[in-house]
Length: 210
Image (cartoon, rainbow, N blue to C red; front, side, top):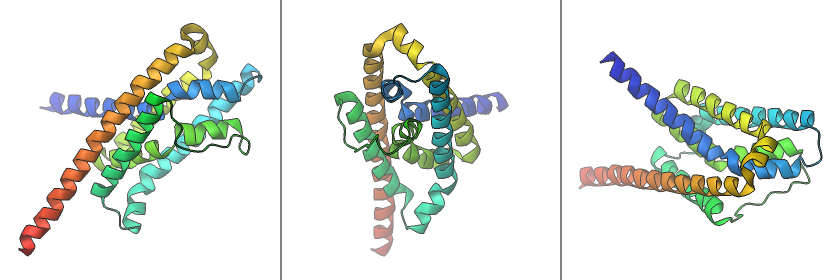
């Protein structure tokens, strides 16, 4: 029994870490990161990667711990948040698959590593995932999974010039589109789950009133 429970914990941990990694989608961040760091030396590029991941981590962990209290403060139910979060993930997936740009990003005001950290790495999708996963799996598992996802993202950013030379930008673009499709599917799952929970809660109250 203990081994089965341990296996299930490992599976959920890997699932959460992979989901956070996919929402961060460093594959689509690499071309942007290289374009805004064009002309800098390797030490500066690595320094930007370090700073970007640190800022992204601070934002991720902040919403892991304050996400639910913030929702309670504004009276937002988890069921409604699942639906809203699902919509955001679907839109993120559409952006990646179809090459759309639904948000506005001004790269002249902020340092390059800030732009990579947010909104590219830690945008609404990552914040949404952090809150939903924390509610479902608990703080410790999501924090550790977030650390693993950040570590993988940090490694990819630091090695981004070599990765582009090795596989080419076309391969990164294809990978990013596949990730976008997975994000859209995850978003649809959250939308259905949230809508189902909300409907069950609403009809339960209605039946009690009747």
